[in-house]
Amino acid sequence: MTKPVIGILGASGAVGRAAVRELRALGHTGLRLGGRTASALCAVAEEDPTGHDETVWADATDPDGLRAFTDGCDIVLNCVGPTYRLRATVASAALAAGAHCVDVAGDDPAAEDLLAAGDPAQDGRTVVLSAGALPGLSSLLPRWLAGQGLDSASALTAHCGGLETCSPTVAHDLMLSLTSGGADGAAYGEPLAAVRGGRRVPRALRTAEDTEHPAFPGRVALQPYLSGESERLATVLGLDRLDWYNVHPGPAVRALLNRLPGRLAAGDDPAELADRLILAADLDLAGRRPYYVMDFELSGTASGRPATAGLTLRAAGSYRLTATVGALAVAAVLRAEVPAGVHFACDVLDPDTVVRHLRARGVADLRPTGAAADADQVEEGVL
Image (cartoon, rainbow, N blue to C red; front, side):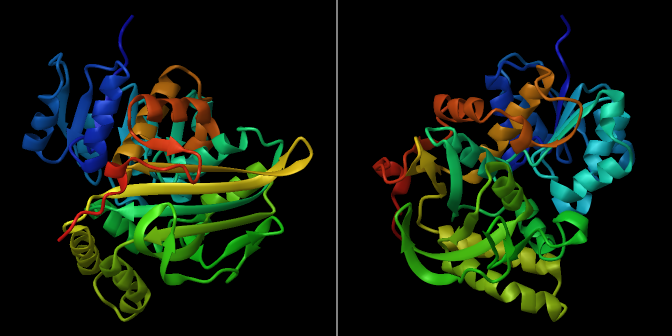
């Protein structure tokens, strides 16, 4: 049986390189590695013990190069951005080449573009979007938690964030998310909003600039933020109430985030602000151990009585988490476990499979909320 050709675009980036390793761990060989820097791609290819990986120059903004990369692929895993500028560019190129596509981001804008061009299900093709940590795992884990003994769920409180380097893609996407990234041309999410009575309520919560949370070491800032993914999660689980907080442990990043809307309104260059965000993340990380945490507390009923379930994920960073979800989505599509059409990863991946893989591969530590973490996972380091 001929092995499928899997193309990884952005294979030498923070997420792409980790995704290549995860795909190899899943038994996939002969990968097609795409990117703009030949030397970096060759370094990734040299990690392949079989020596069967190939490298192809590819730039998502160059139609000819993108066409040459996708031609002959059975499936493309997109790990490049900025997401809200590229939208469905890579997925559309993959479909034109007769390939499936998994995008570690993509979100609503990509889905809208793809469906406006015609549902790929008509050609038997599959596109899986938001196959990353957040969005993606951020909705898969609460769904998994809901299946751990609760008969029904009514309320969810989530805290997600960490301390790590900021890639150029993340920095530029954050700038773009202030005005795009959501459905119908809206911003990616709404600060301070929450779900009450099963619907979005603006300004329902308040920011805590300097506080503590048991799942995070040291002082942190808590920013309430409701995204489209979170709203869909509330609908799927039948939640009456959802409070979602982005957690910012670093003061330099948090101070810059507070100023961003005003600086953009004043006409500051978004590219320059993105560079400043990267530097701020490096400043916050200096002398400290990087980490990423997702903490969920779900309330509901079990056997007719009020009950709660909690889960805390701790990892060395979000990039490998994103890569893992992307690789698992590729594997699921190749096994024909995902129907043709355009989907969000949280709607088509099996939460049990994802959690088992995270644990088996040591990608993250997942424990009931309140359980002690290993010392080396929360150690802060010193300057």
